[in-house]
Image (tube, rainbow, N blue to C red; front, top):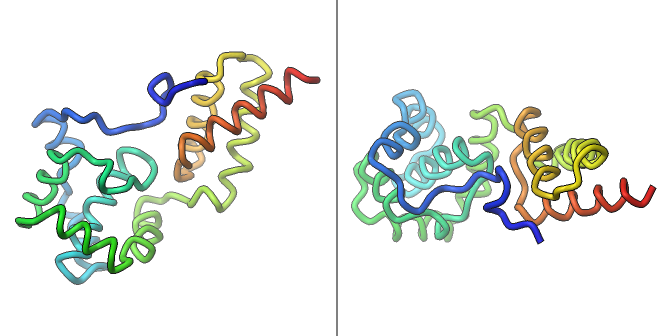
Length: 173
């Protein structure tokens, strides 16, 4: 079975350097203006910043509890927040994520995977299966096609199943 670390599926490292935090995860003035324009409360703003900056890097919206504490603290500092974990719990409890994800997708120029991403993925992994046999390589071609077409990445298990199915279909014929 192919593991996530054998592929190009984006993940956030648990040990981020100061340079990475600053260059990859510090919101720009334009990003902060977007967040403050579309999200009103402190809870909403902080959750929105976390989703925006992590989705920019990952291509999908991670669960907050999967994010490194150092990243959460860095983002909290950038917006002047003292209790980041509690704030993120409130964000989830209030259901802000379901409202903010489409706004952030639109801001980033991304499409939801459910809006045609599966077709894009299946086409890419079928094509890759014609010339590649290693599952990680097939998955990587699927990721590349989704990123190129500006689709949000699905769960890794979705990519793995699509690649396995494509490889089996191509090898069967």
